[in-house]
Image (tube, rainbow over all chains, first blue to last red; front, side):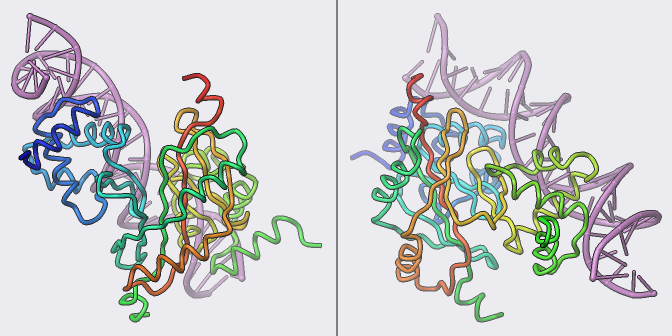
Length: 141
Length: 141
DNA sequence: ATGACTGCAAACATTTTGCAAAAGG
DNA sequence: CCTTTTGCAAAATGTTTGCAGTCAT
């Protein structure tokens, strides 16, 4: 049976890249991460065996290829493994913690949007964030 | 009758700020803008009568106060006047142009999300972006 | 073998900070 | 007045680029 690493290596190659140590390190880390992370945090996580410049290039390329998805949860751009399922984010603007949620209605919403905006041909990806207060932070106010 | 500027001045004061020239310049410009803009573009637009550092501070404060809303449409963070109505963005990833669209179902979606994520008390704002290809760019491929 | 990829150094850009002077209420 | 706000200079961060050497295929 294929190891975790072999599976990801295949995924990386399918996306058109060579399966290098830095790329696998980044992808393995992101796959295991519980919430989206900034370049800096990813770089720190993979350790100094991978240069931060390389992390920039890898993550940007992965994002373009759709292997990772990007968003801005209020603290600058963050990235997460796209293969962990389509979901959205709910962010507490005080403690910055992130919750995931899913929504069935996205397909319908996209159809509606396309109907409204003539001029658009095709939606490739989406990003939806809700900002507010978690119960803990709300209680403190 | 109150001039455009007087109305915005009042809005700025209601939000808890002093109605200074730089703040009104930024808000007037953003109110008239047809799509969300970066700090750099806002600074350039209001001219060099307002320092770019001041634009940073103003826009950040306005965003926190809810006077402007922020998002990342793929090219870094951009801002727009919040009073121009609740809407979402559709962005062509090739030519970067932005279309607006609205969605009735947002309230229901938020209720759903709150149901899913125990731990959340209240949603204050949201941000929804669709990325894809406009017809012009799709035709060129 | 050979093109893709990485690391390193340095350029470049963006964002933040501190403080004295200016301006709003 | 008296506090908030601004401009300026400078520091601190963040991001991109160029290139020689390394690695995956």
